[in-house]
Length: 222
Image 1 (cartoon, rainbow, N blue to C red):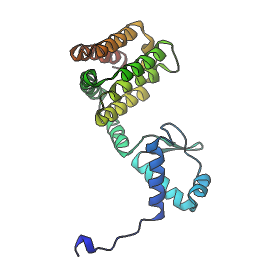
Image 2 (tube, one colour; image 1 turned 30 degrees about the vertical axis):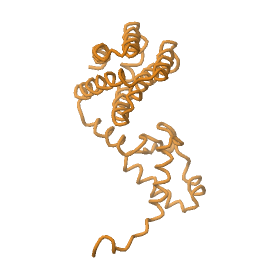
Image 3 (cartoon, one colour; image 1 turned 120 degrees about the vertical axis):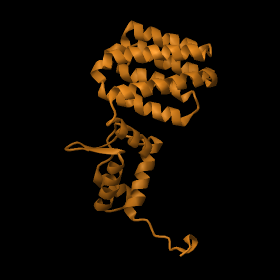
Image 4 (tube, one colour; image 1 turned 90 degrees about the horizontal axis):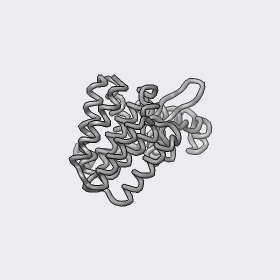
């Protein structure tokens, strides 16, 4: 039967609920690391049965976007299926390969950001770097925010997403090794130099500095 004449199958209610939940995650209404509402609340919100909600949640757990914590609830682990797939793949790759990928991707990011960044981007970078210098919150999170802001300045969503997954993976698995090193004066100095290179639109210098930053991190991981 020609595709145009095939009977369109109605989506199960659980699929519609799953898509609505997935949209909440992508939009940021449910953020990574946060617990989603409990099953009774979701059932009331969507006007469906508990079984329907359970099926929808299981679908997102299978996709890697949610993870159950027995006795505590279900938490968001990825913003979408691509992030979940990349993160899952990293679990099966050796650390050296991940660090090599980080270096290659981050050098491409800073070289591109040196040509695409705006004054507003530079201001956001400065703000996140100041938060790191002020020991505001956890060092890893502040450092990640700085580098993620540079990735966003490329205006390339693919580079930005892949890089965010990689740095999130490294910070999650090497918290103890990386936490305090974010406040090391040598690390801060390298970040100051990187910001200056981006301000001057010096792509070559930015690439060299990033290599030094990744080498600095790697000494604390390997």
